[in-house]
Length: 143
Image (cartoon, rainbow, N blue to C red):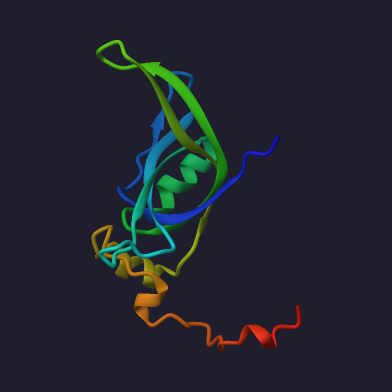
């Protein structure tokens, strides 16, 4: 069976390091991930994905990342069942992070942190074509 998730998104809040009663480091946070298409109103829908990181991964994330910063997460989706305050049974879905990586430079990160989450533009809105790709007609492709 395969359960692998790779996400890139912006932190919705600065992650905080916590420690379990057994002394294990943990952090939980969410990232805003824009979808690749525009909705009917012209905006890009955003999904808010819950992430949990343990041990050295949690320590790394809380030491080097803050709200608004772009982060790449590699991990797996896990579910857990619990009872809420009213006694209703619930299921939580979250990504358990195995790895976290920087995606942008410190300068880009500082500029992005100044903008509220949700004001980030997709590449097509920022002029796109930042790598100087040229358009190729389908009939010109070798395959």
